[in-house]
Length: 567
Image 1 (cartoon, rainbow, N blue to C red):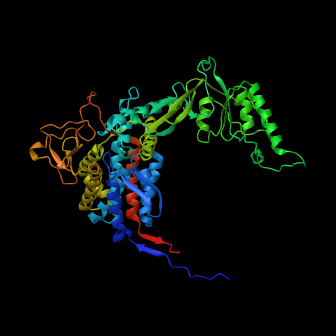
Image 2: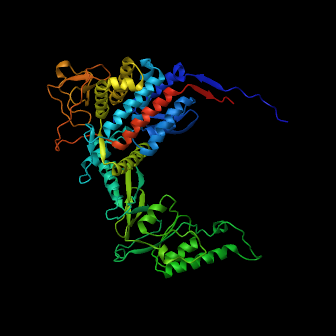
Image 3: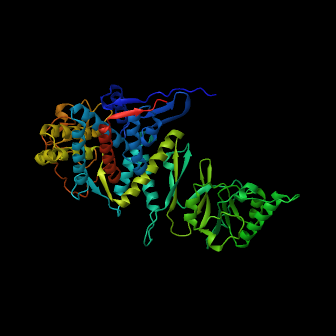
């Protein structure tokens, strides 16, 4: 008889943001994420205290899942940020830092939760409507007739991942490859609904980053005994190809579900093998020259195919099945019990062997225009290579988002400071109407606006990790950084702003971030086409990150109780 144990009562925490332990954890998480932010962010090593894999990263999509917390309030914020990252790939740290800053500022301001939430919602509406305007001062239109801004956008993402450990020339090389691969996945002559292709990434450890390359078509592992004669490999007609998703290993279990009657004395293995041989005889008769199987092929079947001059590729894996069928037009054969219809066959233009370090790859070249390409990524060690692969996947996703909205935002903290200045100015102009609509006092409204703008400015200031000062010019509201030891008389020598569009001039006026200054309307920049931004952020990803940050902060401010089951 099992012993009955009385259930423990649930633990209820009233007003979690008044709990010192929770607030300290939120502050610590904010400091941790701030230290990772931007191209000079500090790396984090995360590992379990009982062993296991060590993670070295500064990327939100890798760092946040690696950080575990027993505090459900922390996990609520973490889950919200990770959901954004899973959908948009970029601006995860921006969303997290802004969200935590908004919570901290709301608590420091002394505002009630309902007032802070109302002001935040109103100011979020100001930001989103401004960012979607055609005359927005921190938005850049992307011209697909030129690859310059696309490369700048890709470079901004890749250079913001310091764990990749790339030089300036390596960042440019990978950025160009990312844009090249992205453009290869966009069909040129498709009518009606357009379906984007795929980029297949292959990692090669121990080789220079500059050896990385992009190839149209698909690269797969080469069979050990494959030898292509170059003189015989110049085909005027495409090669016929067949793809099997079913196993051809000859196992009884691979025949599918159902009841199997076996007569006494019958050798099932030989019968299945005979059936496989009948199948490949049809393949040879149909003049197939490339035979691909997702799983294992019986050695006797392989020998028969090779004896008839057919190139055999087995253990392709499920990951490459979709790009292969897109590339060749083949329909995977999933059964061994029927003849193969003619429409199931696909085509490849040609085959060639490529060598990358210790890897020998078979290059399947598309028969015509194809939206499938392969990116070979090289790096010096496993950690750097893993982070580089993540960075390139994020870059691909962000570039795809530009097809929906061909715009970008100024990077380097300039969008944040510009928005903060705009919100201050707009809020002061409309203070009477806003106070009436929100049902709060002018003082409460002013505190809420200050907290919101300080939060935006703190995100820009988080880009500086070497003790320098973060400032904003009082004309265009762009973000600038100065080394900490710059003298007063040298303040005009700040070089370029964070996004690279503005160069400092002797007559500029400045203010330090997170200090009080007279509100002003940020002046638009002159439309000089010769001057291009050096740092860009994804418009779609950052706009959503801004919304997620404010909405998650408001949700946190609205939590009244935490109820935790202790059983």
